[in-house]
Length: 376
Picture 1 (cartoon, rainbow, N blue to C red):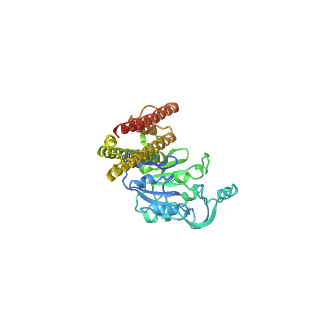
Picture 2: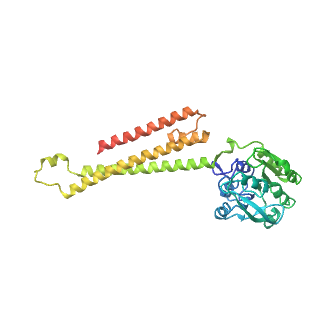
Picture 3: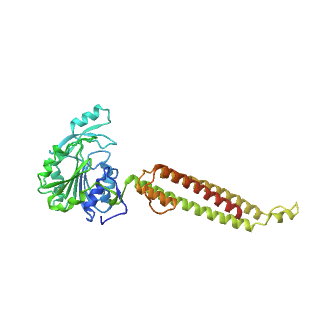
């Protein structure tokens, strides 16, 4: 992988983008065609490529996802239609908040019988060949098909004698099942000079014979050598970074406030001077002002201390939610100060480290408070 953001953030549900990037990471500003694109970020096979300057075609008839594609994928060409082996209209079972929307009647009726919330409506139907006519001269680096049972219809509507994606990836199991169904449509790909490359448990990958050098990229599933993290892991990491920045900012404010209080306290007359004054003498307006400022600053520091503790506890809660993977262990070491990843740890060892980290934070704040009291 030569074009990288370290580590690679995988958005796809089954790490499809990791395998594709392993094969195509050397391509700058490549092109994709995504049939059944769904959400532009969540579980997206193309999001990581779009972030790296790629563009392409997205086809998605869902009323929930198509507006998001238009909003977030400005460089892409987005089509609000279904793909099938006939032009015109088809019935579309639109199932919000899922990836189950389909043009297959038997599936739509089954989901209806199971009580799913479904919006059944007519949508435009186009052939894949007509969709890609406008990019006849464009090199297409991968075609992804995920149409919930309608994969054969999509493949029948393509003209692979003219349209030659380097890689084709097709969902190859029955919807919401491990049962493979590639025997229903695979011949439509193999007969067009494509080679089967890999099955990842959900999808089958095919490589055009004229790009057979890419076959080796599919010799193994996504692994540690691909240097990737998942999108949820990325969000956790970003939140931890935000909390660390907040802690640093609040601690800086606390130190500045302590300096102000120290300065105010030293500028006010010592208590002994006031004891020697006549009982009739009243404190000056300036002294009252200084002492009021001192009390205000003490209140501010107490408030900041509380905020520091809350931020630290929030940081720990986030760390405790992280899955037991090496990248999160490394992140935990960075937060706790070791700065490097170690060998795998057990859950008990992880809990022990978290407990020590809590204790260290508590002692740290106590020492800071004691130092402040001595100064002020």
